[in-house]
Amino acid sequence: MSEALTKNYIDGIWQEASAGATFKDVNPAVNSDVIGNFPESGVEDVDDAVRAARKAFRTWGSMPAPARGDYLRRIGDLLTERKSELAFQMTREMGKPFFETKGDVQEAIDTAYYAATETRRLFGHTVPSEMPNKFNMSIRRPIGVCGVITAWNFPVAVPTWKMFPALAAGNTVVFKPSEDAPHSGALLVKIFEDAGLPSGVVNLVQGSANAGRALVEHPDVNAVSFTGSTVTGSKIGESCGRLHKRFSLEMGGKNPMIVLADADLDLVIEGLLWGAFGTTGQRCTATSRLIVHEDVHDELVNTLKERASALKIGYGNEDDTEMGPVINQKAIDKIESYIAIGKEEGATLALGGNRAEGPGLEDGFFLEPTIFTNVTPNMRIAKEEIFGPVLSVIKISSYEEAVKVANNIEFGLSSAIYTQDIATAFRAMHEIEAGITYVNGPTIGAEAHMPFGGVKGTGNGHREGGWEVFEFYTETKTVYVDYSGKLQKAQIDNVED
Image (cartoon, rainbow, N blue to C red; front, side, top):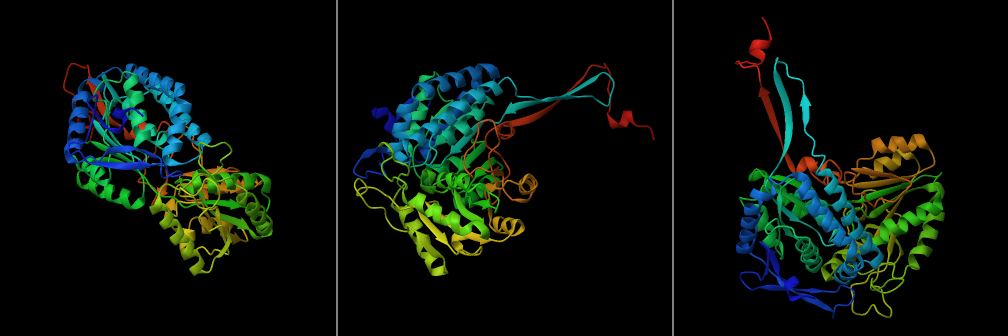
């Protein structure tokens, strides 16, 4: 690894934190593999990065939008060239299998090309005026400096969901990746540099919550986009509200999969294995509740137990690995505490619940796929986000009961229903309280050109991805052109008493 990539990137220069402090980043599958020591940034570092972004905004924001799109296309080309190399390093750093991190990079590639095309479609509106010889229109203007704070589990896809549309719209960025994925963040910013992005347009500050707090609180940061825990997101929302900043929050989930009696159970099993245990359950969109009709409950659970117990657990850069480690010891402790809670609440531990053991697993944070049955809707394991490979199974007797159970939580990110009945599927689209509903597919997966986000405790109404994200990253300016040659007083002149 280049020594530069263990530093911050501010105004086009790779540099250490001003105080010289660092933190260690290790491979969660092989703890003895130290990836590097990265800057523990403070207020001074954040201030330098914001100052650089503010300076760069003067020219970047006034550049023709399609010219900004040309940079994004070059970034997409470099991501394509380096896809496997980048994915390998991402897996080494955060653990999910290589085939998953390649998908993570592909999301970034898709988003780069999509955002580049949208630079020719930053639409305003033209509408008729109520007055003669007068022209009315709206245009989009960039906001300014955007603070981007992201989680570790999608260390390239999620930052690019935020940064690419921000850049396309003419904003500049200060990016703080998770302290659990600093190397992936640096590799991404290196690609920006290699694509020729002007100095100061994207700046990287590494570090923990102190750096994130300084970024949120900085008076010259105009907007903040955050992905992470509900607790942290709520604090960011409070700060941004007090400081009159625009903010977008993408927080927790407790995503339900409803399986009705007429479902294709083979399809359900494939969806459950991917939804519940893909990324070791460490996705905000992970399938964490299986709400299954009593007529197919036993058959489905028995098959799922058999298939889940056969998943190949290991280091994600090794061949045939299907499920990697959780991210760190803190995550292990949290997940194990919820497994204990499930037992105390009276749920049945039907599979797993222990540290995974075996050759190659001795030096990592590995857990077994875990399934609880006899879960009731008000148990904590049925309502609180665990963020690990733990699935709670709830038995129901009707579609109406399933929807009631699905909505019985504070979150509302993703959801799924498996049924062959089209009328029931369309009811579910409207009645499940979630930002996303899949029909006959698991709760995870996103396409770059579609809005992504949740309701209730999951978010604050904004969306990542697709056309809607550009609403967040732009201001609407209304323009009137009066070519009548005289003073027209709008409603005063236009309506007779």
